[in-house]
Amino acid sequence: MKHSLSLKVISLTAVVLLVLFVAVDLEARGGGGRGGGGGGRSFSGGGGGGFSRQGAASGGSFSSRSSASGARGQSGRAQAGQSMQTGQRQAGATDRTQARQQGSSTRQQGRQDASGTRQQTTTDRQQNRQDTSSNRQDTRQQGATSRQDNRQDYGQNAQDNRQDYYDDHWDNYYHPGYGHGGAVVAGAAVGAAVGYAAGATAAYYTTLPCTPTVVVAGGVSYYRCGSSWYNQAYSGSGVTYVVVNPPAGY
Amino acid sequence: MRYMKFFVALALMWSLTLLPAAAMAAQEQPAAAPGGASEAMTLLMRTADFLSQSPRFSVTIRDGYDVLQESGQKIEFGEVRNIVLRRPDRFRSDIERSDGQKGLVLFDGKDIIVFSGKDKVFAKASRPGDLDGAVTYLLSDLKMRLPLAMMFLSRLPFEIEKRVRSVEMVERSVIMDVPCFHLAARTDEVDFQIWIPAEGEPLPRRIVITYKHDDGQPQFWANFSDWNLSPNPADSLFVFAPAEGVREIPFLAQMKISKPESVEKPAKKKGGKK
Image (cartoon, rainbow over all chains, first blue to last red):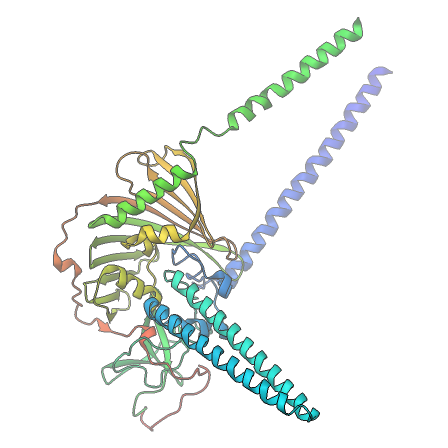
């Protein structure tokens, strides 16, 4: 009797262990399958050399612009805000420091002038206190002027902060690796490139959408894809293609 | 009495069970750190001072970096760069990317030149002055890429002091070509680790930068080898002589940009010739 009971217990235990093993194995295989599926989607989505080489870490700098632009290594259109920041980064650090000092003096003088004007305005209003309607209007104007001053101060402070940020982040290289289909609005030019860019637009690409027709005009190579014309320019770590107007005669 | 024996045996078994765990925990205690935060900062600044005061050096840098793709997949790319630097105003970096593309960044004291072998084009910008000014201009104004640019500057100690918030000693690593102190530093925006030889010249062997605020926290790493503090480069090494067929193109930052225009918009034809 005891022997029969032991056999039953052992058999039951073996069955439980077998079920557990199968369950764990299926779970493992299922996980692997999901992982593989994920990889497949990634490769199909970015295959054919579609992987971006540009990202937050590609610059190898000791700073990061992530807090300003939410940098991420992917294709796509840059935000307008980022474009404006790019433009503001053009000036040299020394120039910016000098400009800040001058700007600060100007703003201080401006605030003093505005304060004096407001005091004078207040005095004038006291003399015309009987005109209730006029008085209310003056009060509203003063409030509006004050708010405008505050907004200007805030805006200027924010701009100063951004400029300080760029001074401290001079080595932060991050330019999205835009493949064709994405564009970015570039900032103001640093110096000038002779013979180039009369009519160049701000859209630039790392690759062209076709095998272009090359036309040399005025010593400059133009690349044509359909109705679009491009010039080559250096940006980041390589050559980019900038949308330009057609060369003369085309 | 029988119960007493049972409890003694149980206690003994329990102790034997916990003994290996206790031994493992003891083994996991970190080895005594060679120094505190102040010593770590001293070591870091010693490296910064040494590099910034070296009148010339050459080094090979093999680096790699993560790029987070739209799919969420992280892909690593890399390159090898051979650097030759001669203060105050000469610099050359020969680059070979992991995809085989070769390039060059050069400063001859007057002009900054970048060259792409694949496209057979180069760009040149005038920037007379010292290397510090040229490197800063290259990145901040011309928007070009030069990994670890900060390490090439004579103001490196100032940059380190300005940015680093804390440094700690991780361990004395013995798996590099020479025993190295492994330091971990934090700035407001990135964390970085650096391996500095425990003895001799404090020329870094490895750097890892983590962009902690960026999606996926990508990393940039660089291994340094073949340090030479007394290279004797000929002046011609810092002269760019484009081969036949190599064309000059502008830096994008130098182009006069007009209003943004959609690429899909057909360009206006100014004439009938095609």
